Figure (tube, helix red, strand yellow):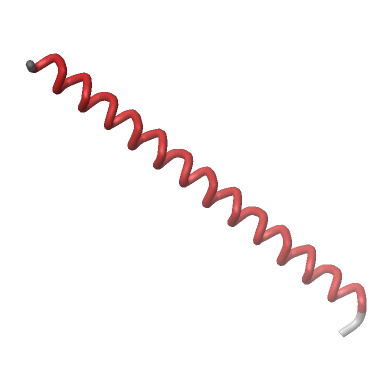
Length: 50
């Protein structure tokens, strides 16, 4: 394995890892905000019904 193909492989691996990390972070943020919004909405609805 020469240096050029090793460098290409490591760059590809680093890029894929970075993209996966970003996707997981965004997914977690979306999930967190949706849950927070649903909780606030449910609390508001419960407050109105009383």
